Image 1 (spheres, rainbow, N blue to C red):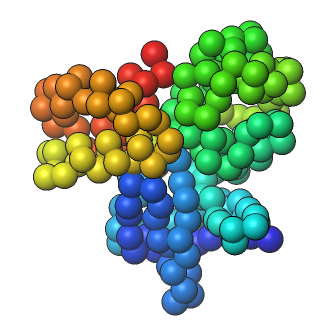
Image 2: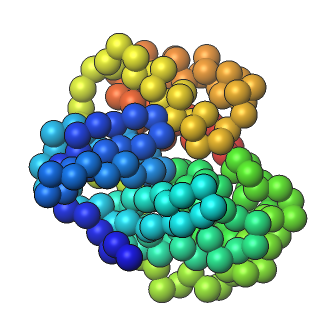
Length: 202
């Protein structure tokens, strides 16, 4: 079982990144691929390995607490790796834990793949059981890069939202606001993805 990889990012896509370790490229699914950059040296990525009938998948996380939160979500009946990853894509992990502790099932149903019953199960299983996690900065951007909007940045962010499981109609609904945000803030893909998640979970 892997704990973490220390290597170089060689590819970034809307759904996954490729991290090269000792000459081997690993395809790793991550909540926000655009927190990483191709060529970024010595990236430490915490890893969860999931084995299913369809094969093996690797899930990557910014730090050990983000990985621990993902694994706690997996222990909830009705939550699979894809749903857990979509929940973690929202940078506000402290807000997520607060919603769980307050029994705010409505907030939890804003995530793809989480219905009312599953949201209630999350509250039942995890309420007051996440105090050991340090989430003040968990999920925040690993890079602080100020760059103009690259051609395709908005398209990449929209593709990443779809890859996380959000319905096409919901992504289409927020596209005008996201376009305005991109123009007004010269936002990069990482910032656009974060803003898109904020709009989708309002």
